[in-house]
Length: 434
Image 1: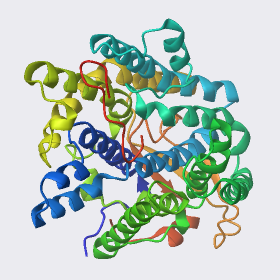
Image 2: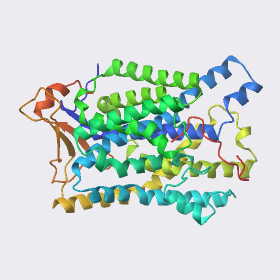
Image 3: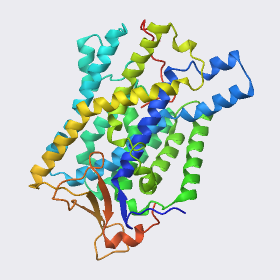
Image 4: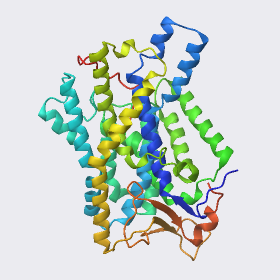
């Protein structure tokens, strides 16, 4: 069984980045397949050999787009529980959040508006609509369907200083979220975001996922430790169960999302270091850019293909050709990351260093979760301490390092080493039609 080289009691922040990257790549694959493939039902009407059925069955593995956005929600809860504990004052927290997410988002909105103009789409042409999208109002359009999740993230950020400011508050937050989710399921059913109200959907669905992530941060030592084959089997079982439940129900639902939440929490602590250390695979550092920019490039790509060849989505019957669109889209997202997101991250780092009075030469940052020494056997008195790296904050989504647990928790933690809708809307053709 492979062992992780990380010291006992640490969780590398690269694990969180790795999971964000995997989620972003999955959402990209989900949307690219939906845009550059006519669909299994279309193909099977024309051909129904064993190979066709096998290929369509394999393509179902990309059908969990919504569930992988739920993975983002859980990781946001985890990261924000740390960020709130390390930030002095609500205004400072909000300032960091705005600097972190809004400038790249503004660029993404204007990129989408430019693409909409180029493909003669009626959307994102009205300045009032663009202004609304910039303020996360009716943000999901046919050019930006992945933006549906961002207003939920922003609302959670607004609430964070009031609902996860302490360990006890996180407990109450989770209890309230579970109660609201059960009530929503009893009234509206278990379908994901089954109501027509943004706020009811937030209270009955997304709030639970953020709450679980925050609770995982405060109880990271209780996450089961699995390595090697056991971890692989557990993840495969949870993934396939999630897929089976979704296909049986006919769409994303509470059960499939809870299964994804379970897999996410398990992976937060158990992602093998040999995977996170692969730079070509760990694209989490620009996962936000992948998420917000990719669909505009998909629409632009479809328009170019139609203009040059006359081929539309309905004509694309190859099971795997859609994957060829992913590398250039990833490359373009990476370029925009360097133009928009990376400067914001660097500015945040400078602000933290200036606020902490730190000098040059930051080492690898670590997050510390410390248990009170008078009750080392209990996790109920854990508290969060600032990172001991020049006094600067180490936010998981913006820095490197590890989440370290002090000796009182080491025994509990010692271990071997270790979007978006599932059936995305078909992008518009060059003429602006679906």
